[in-house]
Image 1 (cartoon, rainbow, N blue to C red):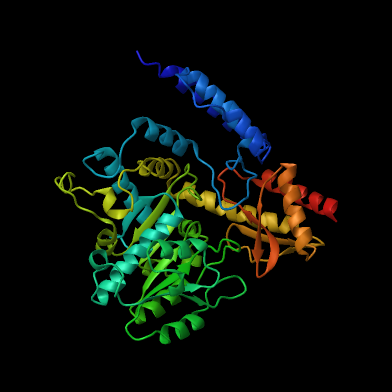
Image 2: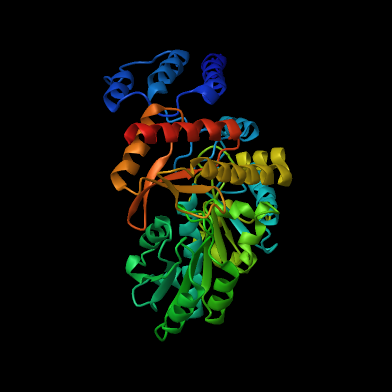
Length: 461
């Protein structure tokens, strides 16, 4: 009989120990790369090892190199944590080991994605016919949304890009804010359009696209050009929102497609308090977001949504004689994402939404927003400048109006271990970027972290 219980019991014990210790664990890795290599490396195993021993030694070996991003005092990048229901569902997803590419390969996974897709569309307040693809993260969500956009703007120009490629195709202009996220540029590289197709649109001091600048850019379009406009809801540094309604209305007057990068900001749509920031979001043509950010499901989990299912499917779908497709009239997930064989990512998303409900998700978003405001207020002292309007969950801070001091404070805070946040550059100046995205973060986490930052500032000064 196969021993499943031994390694799985070891994994459960190690996992629960890690999770229970997370609230007081040092927030930052302790081991060096050399130490991790020494603990985990060695010669290629020449024979079998007891699975339970493998799991135990693996957990011991990685421990010092883990970045505890699930901590309530982790404020780096824009990482969420994992809620109990989503983590447990993720474990079952691995156990069931379903290939979620086709309905025929896993009816359960396909139906869960279909149900979850309808819930997501309702949560975000998008058109009810919106299609949804479950991908790895916002990078591939932006890629997929822009692939649908590429298909549609070229189809409108009389070109079938999936059949004929891009050689000889009408040119495509991409109008995007000067402070867009780099995943837009990278997606355009993957799509064969190249970054030279981007025409940056001027933004204000918070990184919001200026509608008057977009008007000028749309009017200056070359004859015969197909146009895609990329809006942003949730600037990665400031949290600022582009004026989506104005952008959509202006773009659609020029038959342009509007894609919205909402990696974390789209979740503000669930909050009645913050929903006005997204006025007009339902007018866009495609949207990208992450579930592993504000929904707090385990990595990896991205979402692409499209108001034009035909364009979405045309850009992604494939047919092959050996596949079983469309026989039951059910939705085949591979028609809406760039992967073929893939993990059933919809299952943890389903569990998270089922466990939290609309009000629970809104509570997480509202609390993180309130905690970001509390953080900013606690840091507003002599020698500290909060650079952004705290409209969402991002706090951008500079120390002593000095690049070197700011970078030293960031490094000292990371080394001290009470909390962890990353540095950035904003308008040519060094800054600390604080992102409050974890479902467990509360007032005590904010107060302890702010005190540590100010203490490190005094040490540096």
